Length: 545
Image (cartoon, rainbow, N blue to C red; front, top):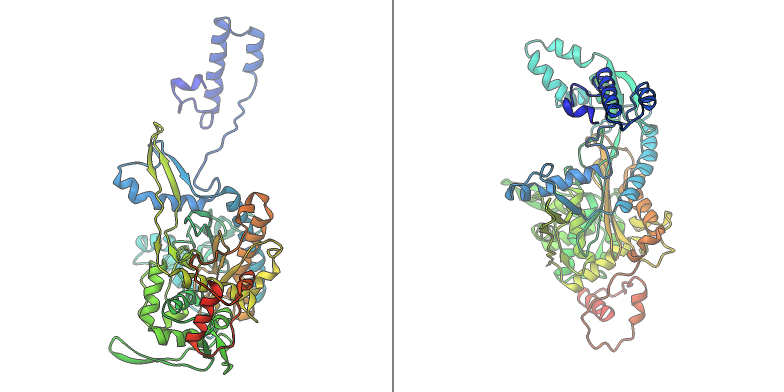
């Protein structure tokens, strides 16, 4: 190292090993000259080869790569405003991430996605998975994807007048290393073949946060950061399907409805005007049928019955649903159409999970927090997070939605019951959540809630055209929910996270209640068979206060 000081590049042991070794020996002889080393020792050391323990750290190294990129984007406006360089100014940044939870999140995502990918490959064996709404292969799909790549853009600029040359080089095989679920693999593929190969993969996103603080505890943007840089937590926006119903029913609770209100599962149509044209929207239930039964809103939410969600939306107006979605945390502009109530408008997993917080946070909304404090190179605190929360739901409505969330586990046939497959219920902890699946099973979603932690998962192809063909394989309870189940299984088994266990809070408001129903707090509140919506909501008030 002393020898390098004169000319670090010229004597570099990496680029000029012989020069470096010669320079090292000069330094050793100088030590002999000044009596700091014996000649015999010098001779022995001079004959030794150079041994380097050298590795270059890059953006792929270390933990939570997607989160680190998200932190950089999170801080960009603040850095610009304060004229600071994230990499050159010696800043010490304190994040909200929990390294142990992050490890569990990454493990859960990898474990499930590796298994799901095998299932997907078997499902499409001998066929390409990019299909239209009728499950017919899209003939120009790969060529259209290829035209959006950097390689194609480069070739088009170079051979604009020679399309045959573009085609030649796009199909020219060359050596490359590719991602596989069994580790990296060296192979020979053309650019077109590489695009085909990677479009067979399913992708995922996962985020967990404390709903009481907004602190993000884990963040997994996809299945492998080195090969898939696109972040499916915040960058990706897809149709949330039935997870959007949480905003429909939150608006309903705020506007006089209750979990015990009855509606009939029948075909329903919605007449509206869009861009001056009269339109009719007539959605179906997920299974394509209508039972004709009168059911409670709690049951309808648990079973994810589309016809009931649409009827609720007709009573409120779809603009009211959009209003509450934005109030609760959805930042993306939503399409001004009635189908928004069934999740037809794209959102990110990041904002969806955040927007669920008021339902289990006594009605308070807050923004996700990634950084709590920043200290400069002199040890001075130059940024410190200040908590801000805003009430967007009444305490009573939040409590009722909390009960609705738990209904997916306790109502007959609830879509969240796949959680029973995981070792979660021996702990003294409440659970709730909502599944979601977009059209053609292109996107699978799950948002899970406990009294202290809210987490969400998304699973889908790089394109909406890449998906399972059946509900049995492609619904959110099969594709996304298992990531949450595995994650919470690992977290709750870790004694260091004992503080996460507990029960959803009871409302703080109290009134005189002559009816002895306090025992109802010990289990999900049942819906009584009372047909009157007004009376039913009053019954709930008696129960909860």
